[in-house]
Amino acid sequence: MSINATLFVQAIVFLILVWFTMKFVWPPIAKALDERAQKIADGLAAADRAKSELTAANQRVEKELSQARNETASRLADADRRAQAIIEEAKARATEEGNKIVAAARAEAEQQTVQAREALREQVAALAVKGAEQILRKEVNAGVHADLLNRLKTEL
Image (cartoon, rainbow, N blue to C red):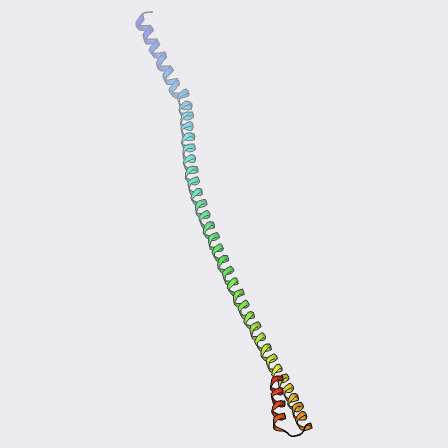
């Protein structure tokens, strides 16, 4: 065999090997590589989706936290307003009750003053009657009468 025939046979065997590789070996390898590339692309896409979903979830969480803070602040403000209203109402009731107590005390003092005046009038009337009795028992004398009236004045 000459080098040319060997080279020619080797070239034919090489071409058969290339054809066999391209026909039977390369498609499964290419298919496996394509599947692997697709899996990687799907994984990257899923990672991007997960990242965007995480960002969206973080935004929702921040929004809900903000709403919760606002609602809490609103409720605290409402509670403070209600507490102030209750305090003001209690103050108003206490003032009203105090005014009623003062009015009742004044009315009672006025009533006691009236009773004291009545009692004093009765005592003055009794003393006047007593003085008149003493004047009438003694003889009628202007000096004695003046003296008795002076003593009556001092008793009053």
